[in-house]
Image (tube, rainbow, N blue to C red):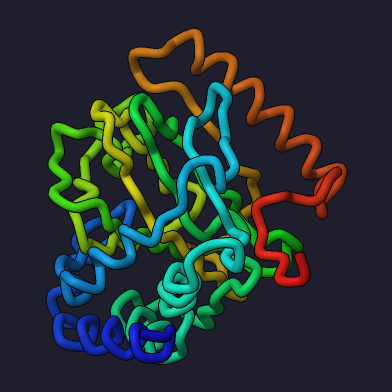
Length: 271
């Protein structure tokens, strides 16, 4: 199946459950989000999982903030992966999600800035953080994060689950299990602290990621911040280090709004 056909399936599923999803979204304040299960036919979701590349074909992000494999260079992988990534960028899918969330002027990201696919192996994690507030050129606000999970038989005990921190990283997290064939859509703004718990298994947790952007911020006023990480409540030393790191990176971005170097996590179709 191609992106148009897959997009049509996603659009139909969203429209069928639009009322319930809208209710989910509005009741989930302050980190608005909704979750939809059994997004695609299970045989298609299984094929997408099987199409994921070996770790050697992906980029390892390894530091105090995170540990995971990522890739945005979709033409280097099974064609089905490119089709599912860009299925979420089909106009009908964007319009269905715009109607559910009530957000304005949603745009997909053909460059896959921080999007694409990711794999989390044993011990991999993503510490609490706020996503970069803008696109790579700081022209539009990043407003939605779409996460589609395809690892079969995934349970909460496996870890590698999405965590939302409505009271910030000093509070308690709400867990959204990375269940097979589940789509999670969450707001990204200056309050949307989220993380991924450590994978406790020797199995890969595979995810298809997209971000949507807008001309308008989410909330009352304008804001800007780089991706900012914190330690978990049980990581006080790491928290101090990551706070200092976030402050330094914030000053650098104020001095150099376009960044001091080009990000590697974008889709460059000519390469």
